[in-house]
Picture 1 (cartoon, one colour):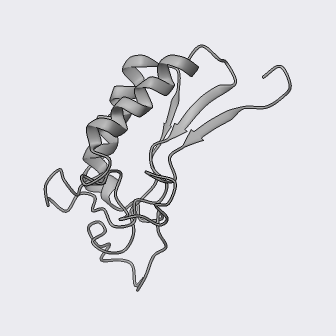
Picture 2: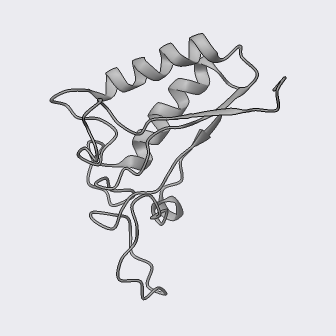
Length: 135
């Protein structure tokens, strides 16, 4: 803030060679959800006191996730965003938490008023209508 800069951290990859990855916020074969939460918690403990760090984007484009389809927690980004976001806010309550949308498949409940045939990764926020993220 002293120099007019603010920092928002974002998780784009689960590993250095993981692009685009499996499209989830975790990969049980390599990085479990518990490890993701631990990593964010370590960063929050170290960086919360720095005023220029103001926010986190929990996961860039979780395109292979669902949101609000009732498929269980292993695939539901809305439920995961609550777990991750609330874990971070317990450590650093001043941070803004950004939650991107999912992709088209498996996606979120369809909007009967929409004729969209496709949607880009991270754009699909339809699940928030039936399953809001409660932070």
